Length: 141
Image 1 (cartoon, rainbow, N blue to C red):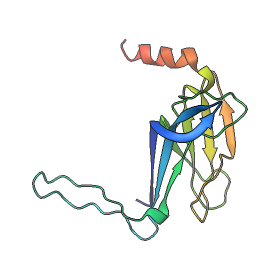
Image 2 (image 1 turned 180 degrees about the vertical axis):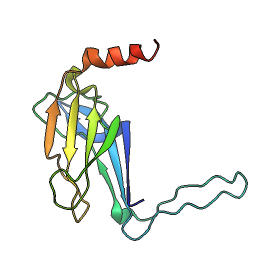
Image 3 (image 1 turned 90 degrees about the vertical axis):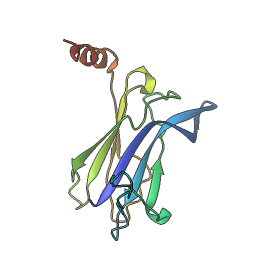
Image 4 (image 1 turned 120 degrees about the vertical axis):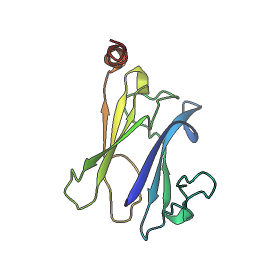
């Protein structure tokens, strides 16, 4: 694979809002020169993931925005690729925060040549409160 993006919705972060720390993060591992290694454990035969290049590693924490800011938004609960939505030649992705301001938010990030991301290019505030509950209930029918 080229790069790896991992969501960590309960990651404790240094970002604060109203004196409260905000939880959640997204970890981005850039595989610029095939830095990913998957050695096989000799005992179990399982492939292990290793990554030893901190200069191509980034952590994104929940940004402040106009939707309201809860201190446990679940930022990183979902991460999905979007393709190249701004047609710049780099892949873009979305990050979900289902508990942001008791409704939810989706953050859109555009990839770049440097691979470094600062702020989302778009924040979509939504009200998923009951629709997520109904999806959960439908799993048991």
